[in-house]
Structure formats: structure tokens, C-alpha cells
Image 1: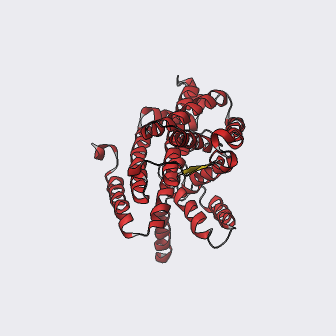
Image 2: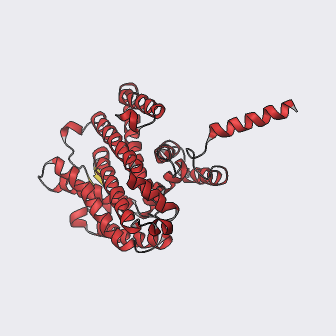
Image 3: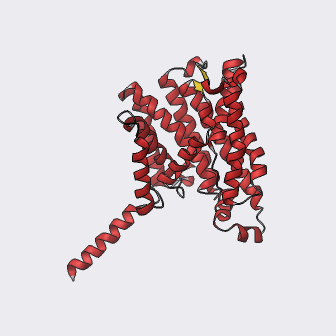
Length: 321
């Protein structure tokens, strides 16, 4: 059945990569296992944003706030209540989706830049609540040492949990994009006026996309709690949203897997280059400038193979002449 859904070549590569990631903790140091888990969580967040930005054409400038809501709701349940762990894992994504629905109801009436600016304003209100409500959220200190269920408390077990949930979410996102809803969403991105003319309810589709994307952002948020064992207000700050937006742009926001590559590049830069210099963002800025000039469609949006074949044909033709 899966072979009928996914192209055989892509399916084979995905299975091979999945097997490689399964055995990775046995052959790499513990620190790199942790970094891979962080990349997985960030990749899921970037993929959820790309559903509405790259495939939906919405200016979702403050997507990180839903990531923070999922993390805070799940983390607070684990830290301050005696409810079972699975309640936190369900409540986090649902709270993020409900927040996305409520904010989306206000923002969806506006277009493009105004949509994004209003979302930043409303999302910043949630950041202020997390930043100032010391009794509940710990204020700017956040909450650390959140009790994680024993079966996923080790770095290896949390790695496998994040990997499995990431794969499930990627399959669901792929199926959504390949469904009639996904096709309508991409058509709305390209020409909303024509879609409205043929009877597609543009705002309803966009609001549904926001709810779906924010749900997956909430999933990423609770996975962050599992990996880090802490929550803090920066999860809801607009700077994180900008960073996730850059990941989509870097990897290729009109592609499916581009945000995964963008997340891997930026997390790696922040981790490894950041150990040598605090100006790693300067290196990222240079990369983005080069990307805008030479690869405006992102790393995965550029067909290197086709360009190489075209160059080879021109070289062969010039040699014959």
C-alpha cells in the first residue's frame, strides 16, 4: 500500500535512511544522539510551518508561539499535576491547535502581510503571559527538571520516541498534501481569486490548514519537553519563529522535505559553529544572501541534476563546434 502512495525511489531512500537513524545511537556518541533528536524536533516544527507557508501561501510569521503553547501545556501538566503522562502528550498538541484556531479566526480575515503582523501581535500576548506569570510558568526563568516518564527519560529512549513520532507525522503531512484538501490549498496559494470563483471556500481551507499546522507544532512542543526536560518563554518569542521561517526558506519552501534539510543545517550551525564563535548568525546571514542570489528556491528546490545535464550538453555541443 505504501508503495502506491510514495514513489518507489523515494520510498526506498526513506526506508534506508530510517534504518540508518535507527542504528545511529549504537555507533555515535551520546552528544550526537542528543543533537539528532533536537534536529528531529526542529524539523517537525519547520515542516508544520511549511504546510501553511510554502504550500498554503499564508504569512505565518509567529508559528513558534504554537510550539511554545504545546510545550508549556504539556510541561505544566507533567510538572504541576499528578495526571498520567499521556494526558500531557495529548493536551499539548490539542491546546496548540485550539490556540491556532482562535488566532486564525482573527487573522484569516486579513491578507498577506497584515495577516502576519496581526499574528505576531496576538502571539506576543501569549509570550508576555508566559514571561510574567511567575506563579504558573516560572516567568523568565522557565521551569526546569520537568519529570519525564521513566521509559523515555534516557537520551536513547527519547531519541527513538522522537524519531518514531517524526516519521508518523511526516507520513501524515505527506498524505494531507497529496489529498484533495492539499491540492486545493496549493491552488489557493497560487490564485485565491480563481479558487473562490470556482466555489472553493478559501478562508475555510486556510483556517483548516492553520489548525492542522499548529497541531503538529504542538506535537513538536511536547517532544521538546521530552528531549530537554524544561520550558522557557523564548519558545513563544518571535525570534524563534523567524528562525523556523528561515529553515523553510533555506531548505526550499515549495518542496516537501526542504524544511528538514534547513532545520539540520541551522541546528548544526548553531551547535558546532557556535562553539567556536558567538557570531555564527553572521555565517548564516552570508549563506542566506548567497542563497537568495543563486538558489532562490532553496537547496532542495534547485534541480542540480537537470542543471548539470544542461551544462554537459552545452559543453558537448561547443566541443563539436
